[in-house]
Length: 394
Image (cartoon, rainbow, N blue to C red; front, side, top):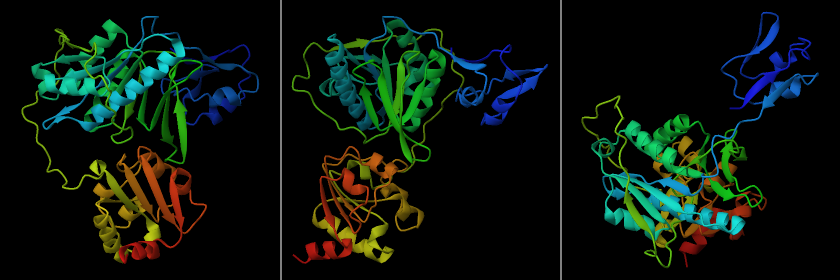
């Protein structure tokens, strides 16, 4: 494992490292600088040391040459296979193609299906899976995250995948960290972009950081599998031309040594919101540029006229103009419609991350330098209210 190493012979006890550490992970003890367990390896102390007495030890590889293939966890709900599972399969197939182009070797996509059926397995194969591992066990049927993590970890330790993806759902966000902890590997949450690097072969995992003010690309060079969670609507679903091919469906046994920590008597479902912005094939997204709440009916009329759903940016939800179910962006809902019309939205980086999956984007904004135009396929510089009214009168 990686760790901070202090050369006490070089150390002059200037304490600059103590002042530089943002989490107070260094302390003076017995006349020397010591590292506490809460160190997060930010390396700010390494940069602060004037004598080069502090270094970061290289991590030992926690994997071997058997680590290969791309796995994903296919989440199942009472209504069937979750849409995000199909999105993950399609993206995994794309990553597998990138890996093959780099190395020339076949990279297999495997979907892990808990308590599913043959129809769900076929759906995953049609979206790009080369194989499906399923398990119909009572613990998995109850939705116990500990059970799901135990099943996944047992398979990973046996078959050594190189990449393991999860949906960034409530369930996925509970299972993925548990798996990462048990496997001793890293985990990148809420990724908006995944790409296999052509030089190193590492998975480049990109996500918003520092409150969404910049995009950070993260790699995991020292352990396997490389793990990430992905929000729904970030990647499109793609069907392959030959879904059957040589794909396999295999039952993977549940670990016999699993001891549950909880007893799930029943699962209570909250009443679902009648509006789901992620399912709209056409979407109108409005922002502060519409001026005031009184202009929302005009925007709804425009959306209805073109057969689109209505979404909004975060400021409109914070102002109480719209419900959270309509919010589009990294802190709201990631969407991937065929057509997205952005009206009066400036295009902050976290908002752009949430609409990255849209096939076509049309932006209307008075500011010609608004970031939204950088992501748009077509742009109209002008007053959005006037533009919408002109359209409705035609």
